[in-house]
Structure formats: C-alpha cells, structure tokens
Image 1: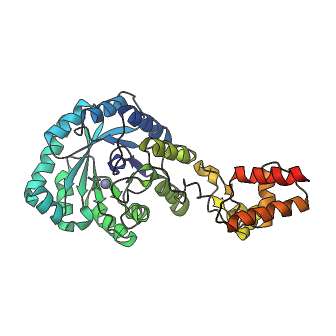
Image 2: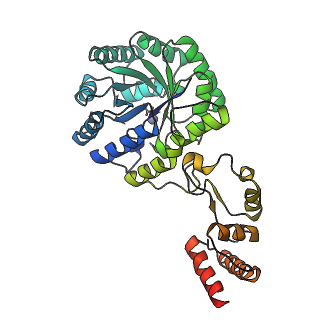
Image 3: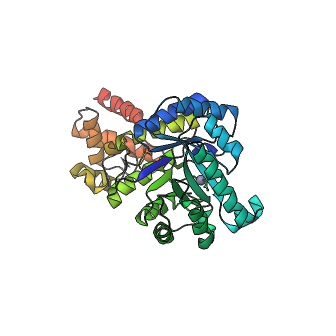
Length: 371
Ligand code: KIV
Ligand code: ZN
C-alpha cells in the first residue's frame, strides 16, 4: 500500500518566520504540488485573513486532483471560514499535552474532548472530511491521547499525532505509532518537527509503526527548525525502506526551487536530495571513483530527483576530475595545457576560492589562448 503525502507547505511552511504568500503565489505552489502528486494540500488556515481565504478559494476553484484542506481550531468560526472556501477537508487541531491544555487553552481534559467532538460533528454535518490532530501529542499522556482519538473514532475520518516540538526519537516513534494504530480503527497520520534534526527519521519510523499518511513541507520549511522535508521523507521511504508514495520524484528539484523563490527562502547547498551540493563532488578520490562508477559516491542518481551531478574544481580536486570536467564541457587540451590549468585551479583553491564554471572557462581561454 502507498503511504499518503499530506503537504503542509502552504500552512505550516508558510508559518516560517518572516514568510507571507500572496493568493496567486499560493495557487502557483498548489498547482505544482498537485502535479508533484501529493494526496492532500493543506492550503492554509481560512480564518487567518481575507487574503488567505482568497488564496484558498483560488485553489479550491482549480479542481485539482489533491484533497484541499484548511487548518482549523475547534471553533465554529474557523470551520465556517473553511466551508466558505469550499475545501474538501479540515485539519482540526486540538491540544493534547498537559502543558498545552493547562497553560495555552486553560481548560480541563473533559472540556477539550467536548470541544473536539462538537467541532467534528459540526464539520461532518457540513459534509467535510475531518482529520483530527492531537497537538503536542508526543508530550501528552498516552491514556488521554487514546481517549481523544477514541472520542473521534466513529466521527472523524483520520487522526494525526503531532510531534509539535520535535522530541520524538525513531525508536519512540515506532513504538508510539504501534500502540496507537493497535487501539484506533481510523487511518493514522504523523506530523513531525525538526527541532533536533530528527523529523525525517521520526516520520519514517512512524510509518514502520503503522502510520499511513505523513505530513511534510517542501524543503522542510516551517516553524522554528521546520517540518519533516517532503523530498527527504519520500526518497528515504522509497530507497531505504522500499515504501512507495504517489510522488513523482523527478519533479522534486523543480518544486523545491519554486517554493524557495516564492517563499524567499534559499535552499542550503548541503540540503539532502534537493541542495545544489547533494550530488556535487570535489575530492580527487571521490571524482576518481565516480568516473569509474557513479554508485561509488552517490546513493541514487541525481536525475531520479530532478537534481544534477556537479563536479566542483578546487583545492581538493585531482587531475582526473579536471580531465573529466573538461571532457563534459567539450574542451580538448594537451597534457601540458591540462597541467597549467590544474596549477591555476590549485592556486585559486589555496586562496580560499571555489572555481566556478565561468572561472574555469576563463582559465581555459587564458591557457589555450597562450599556446
Ligand atoms: O506542529 C503542530 O502541532 C502543528 C499543529 C498545530 C497541527 O502544526
Ligand atoms: Zn506543525
């Protein structure tokens, strides 16, 4: 069975400090996510603002393949705003840990249960699909978490366990999801944050424990250290666990760059899968290995995820890397010319400089022009 991908780039991702999208930006990203093959697009939170509702409406009117969802609190005003935007589903979020219930909501556990049930009933009466999310579930008491999900069991369509502050470990994640999926009859989703850099691993472990849907964002953007990254989760599932999703992997790089541009959040070069260094090689022995067989230093081929292999020339480069790169660029040079080019690259490298393709062309012109 394929694991479903619930994309929250346009809701949790847009909550990245300093980020704000226009309605047309939202639509452009939603269309790209739909083409990428995500199963659910959390388009935003309809109650947030007039502009947010405008963006969600543009998306729902597009008749995309994906289910379009709005984030809501257990309040009729929030659900009404989602209904006004004609979404397919709501992501109903209810606090579940003592710290959230007591200090944030200032309510009792029973009041939280009532709020959840009333909100689900209201949404179902209006024909919405409901995903009931337990916020801060990984710091909740397990008994209460199960009680909350049981309260929604015969009403909601799915439940979701949120690791709101990223405190799970892969081992705890698998154990927790095994317990929850053995108690609850509904499909269970996982929503992980990356505060300790564990979001992808915790998401994969949750799936091993029985979760059937993962919440992710493109480039892992989101509150604080972000959410589980879509591109990491889907490729790890496929290549490390042999678990499929509906994502068209070859579109990952392109969608990553669209989100980076519209959100004004550049992708760090060393970002797994979609970073510009994810398939870049400089060290002499690495390039030598790659020339013989790309599998030596690449776990998967860059084209599989729409990225590309980059051979970087600098102080760690070997002569073979230079020869390989010149060949790729269609440049023919004699042994002596290659030696001169190589010396210049090392000189630049020692000055702390990286040799870009433009630098290399300038060096080549200089050396070849002189001979
Ligand atoms: O991380 C979280 O708990 C959330 C919920 C509000 C769904 O994003
Ligand atoms: Zn979140």
